[in-house]
Length: 502
Image (cartoon, rainbow, N blue to C red):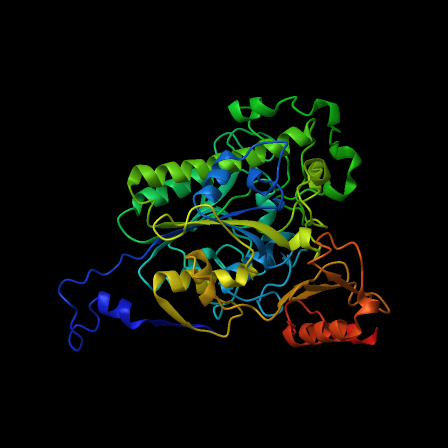
């Protein structure tokens, strides 16, 4: 597992080597940067104006991109929530990271319990790495990596403060009865399983803003895991909603809960089903757009607060989505072209399911208006932030720091030989990228002879032309990568050996 080792420069700066190393009197130790990682839930690659969205605006994130760097080839951990977030937080791709799927847990009576399969004590997270360097650490939003009080609880994974929905199912409602604040339930005014008054996403956003303000005088890491724009599709009837009410009236198809049995299972006290009951929605298009706009407004609040506190210059903001756009609760990603030029949505290992909009701003260091086609992924974030904070990782992780790219030193940037993803749904799905070649296999375990699909992303970004028959050597090499990168997990059994049969 990863070990954390201080670089000599940071140790000297903290005075830990004072008895044996002299620090030049006039040399000023550079302050470690504050870090905000803003992760949204189920937003598509093409849902921001700066990535091509034309049917609604995202002014604050467009501004963030204009003041920082926009990546065009950045990837999620995988195409669904929990394993993707596990990849982000542990610096491991989904062939190695402990959490490989959205695994629900049940008690002896067969009732779903609150929270999903937990990270273990052996897992080292970004929060633990940064906390070891003196950072205040806070998580605000959806967690989904461990039952409250378990080893996977955010308070046991390096976070000083947590305010949000520990359980993914609870996060499917934007008006739950309560959120967790550290190890206590925070009851939300006017909310129960039927009444809706307090919008939970606003509460979690306010928690993040308070954390930033309270820790403005020391380095902090805020993991803002915003639940927007995940289903259920619902927005407060406020000024943001007024901007979209009726905007797409000619194209709206109301979402009627009673005619969608796949999403009518209830969850609450005494319920055995594992999924939330999404609400009906008369205007799903307007609601989705308003949710993305609201998320953009949250980013605007953070940017404004950093400027007001005088700490924006030395604060790194990273923005991404955990996977591609969803189709639940009445969402229609095709209407907004949410996946942009890509193929696929949430749960797909085609590009639309795993490639994400990714923006980073650090005014003191990153040249404004930069655009990068560097190929990177969630598992690169840990070494990048450790690098920025002056921490050396002795790691068995899968990431490569892309700090040189952020700083404009592209000639110093190391690159991945290949990339790998897997997902334990629908009989198993795997994908690998080598240079511009992309291999995708669906129904790895269920199909008698799973089909190996091969795409050349340099000429076929939309993955429409399977050229596997024309390039047997490339197929062979990608199969070798898949066999090498998959590590069997007892928690999420998944075998890839059968792809060699075709």
